[in-house]
Image (cartoon, rainbow, N blue to C red; front, side, top):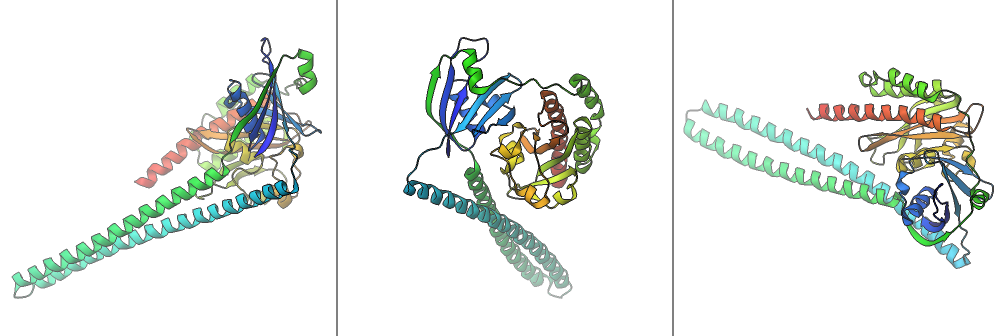
Length: 400
């Protein structure tokens, strides 16, 4: 884990003290949330933030809802050659372990599928044995010694049923074992990617307003390009019939509404693949000059700004992606498209996160506004509600 210095200014209008917290964390957002929790504030409430990466390596995070700004800086820890080598070896070991866990998860999934096939085969053989036993009984009834034939048939039927029952029980045990292995492999894979943080040091200091401003700056006022309340009211009316759509129709419908409201070079709706044990992210809908090229591209869960948004359940408005530590260059390398600014909002329904809505390269400016964030959040919420109902209906129909 990296070590961060998190500066948390006193709340406006209070006589509290500004606080600097040193935290070891697996990401800058987790460092900020952990730092706020350490001083008794609710860091989990940071559901929508704007990021500004400065030339000195610091990240200034702006919370539009509270109008507070925070400063995060990754600390450079001096290390000996031996310590650096040990850290690099640990990182390589962690990556190798994560790869092994992914392979184990895939293997467990295949074993689960194979065990279910064996169970279906055993059930079919049992039915076949019962049908054969019945046929044999009917043939035996035609014989002169009906009583002896019936007795023999009962013995055959009982033996066949007992054998098939034992085979079925064995197959069911195999299914349960494979399911247990699959769940355990998923749990280990998830644990290897789960973030963590711990407090290192907390320093409180009384600071004058001008000292706070000198440290983190002031929140820049960005003019909205549309009447937010009017646009949200119009979108409410336009999305009333979304529940009548299937998944493909709904994701394309929501993406078009977003790009009709916010002028940008590109946009996409990225969903988690529920059929993959690793839940990789794929492009369910895309607009822009490289939209067709995105069809076959996958993003590992947790990678990039969109992966970070899905995992953290947090809206991110990034004005310069190349300065953002979460930016994933894999998509740009495959498509040749240059991303500059990104607004990414998680798609959540019920207790599940299905993916994210991503708007790329705002036209005319790289600064996102609170109103634009509100619009995309509203559309993502509507899509999340629809996907939650849609997937529940698919599951119920599959059980019938």
